[in-house]
Amino acid sequence: MKTPLEVTQTIYQLFSEGNLAGFIDLCHEDINWVVNGPADLKKCQSYRGKQGVQQFLDILGETWTFSSFNPREFIVQGDTVVALGEESGKDISRDQPFYNRWAHIFTIENGRLVQFREFLCCWFGEEKAPDMNWSTMH
Image (cartoon, rainbow, N blue to C red; front, top):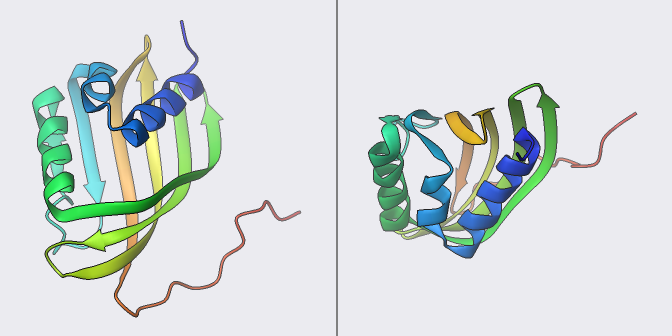
């Protein structure tokens, strides 16, 4: 059986390849999926079960196109994996580019994703994110 980190990395790989059926297959039937972020983003809500994950992916596909999607750092503790990353693309409804930084928290049990929580910071159009170095500081 894959480790929680390996499952998480597989989920990102499937998402990046556009293999959404494979992505959803790694989710538990009763998964709890929560996206925290600006209230005016349609995707920022709670979803339940594989149907909920599909609903989230449908909303994502209708509202955003990605030019980059980069998990940068992984922190593992038992069945929990925290991924820190960034993404950019175009917000279709606003007709503006976006840049986001996020923290994704995965809970993996028996090789399946049982809980996903996202904490999202967004910048649109000409807004600029604060400078940040992704390398670990010592």
